[in-house]
Image (cartoon, rainbow, N blue to C red; front, side, top):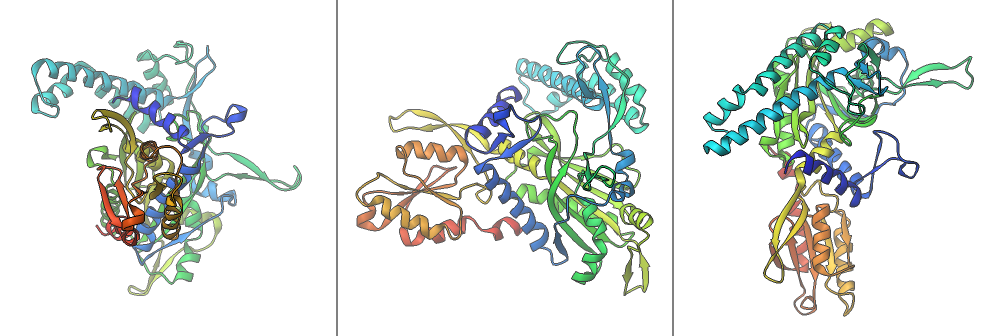
Length: 514
């Protein structure tokens, strides 16, 4: 299933089944702002829990924080966001539509790569090559569209590394890139646009102070570094983890919840002794990749991307990219930030943010290795990865197509659904007792509406891993049927064993012990 087919199905499924709604939809919505619905909030919270357990609970030297969204404005001067947190923008003079210049060029590269892949698949079909074979890869890398993509990528890299806005515009013009609205190629100059939302603190205009909604959660950790270190009595190395909202006035906010103006980050800043950053950078790269795989994402959907242009303060930066329906895109960043952040806040605040090392009897500003993953992008990654359409046998001996969300069981919004076969003969009462027994440990649903077959399909579509059916035999043998979402296997077991069966299938130890 290609992008044109899959991505609209995912966005439609998200709304139809109560995962994600457009914000303020009754007022025609607000661009690139979304609300997480009843199933979405459960999936989102489960991802948060999986991250928090892996990052905080599994490490004795990492603690949590929940810093305020509003911070003193000098924070953003010290961090460099006031002066340098910008995107290169370009306007189409005919449609008046504004674009990010870098995104236009990236899209053009993606078009060449897509044409290259299409050409290669066509040739492979004719020649009988298998995907990934030596002949296939050689043709894929050598055809004309692949060469165009490579040449354009090199031009783009040079322009970005030198902050050459004129060259970015020249590339757009030379490539004949047109406005998607008007089809016009009449472009303005490229200029930088700051992405921070500004607000004010104060009762009157005369006494108010300009503030910013935080564009990232990391600075809340840095300004609290010393408070946390002293009160938690941590020695280096140690980390501070945080999950929180951030806000960016994205001009090109698109692809559903992939790029939004209000989003959530899961970040951990790991404070270390200078000179040890390389080993910790490699450690966190491996650890974070293992986390994504442990949650069920297949290896072929993940890849590393090394930054072509490092921030001036960084000495290492790599992204974990996920294969979204629209291609491989950034999911998480691992960054070696040196001592830039703490040193800068020292300078602007006039407060010492140093660590006294009891072993060496010296005081120094710690270095930092950061792991930063987008919660909304992780949500979308699991929606994309889990969505499947399958042919399954029906009662008439034929097959039906079912839509199934194959979430990792620990991420699924509901862990189990309990069904009475019919709404009479005392079956609802038995089913409700099972529901009450399970709900203290797991998020479960009681469902008695429609036929059992329809209920199965409904819970397949929302990703419920186990369905428990109470039938007429239950009154005789005190047993129920447990159906597995993925295998469709149905197991008969005593009611007394259901709780332990479900709990064994939902073990955090199995997930986190890698």
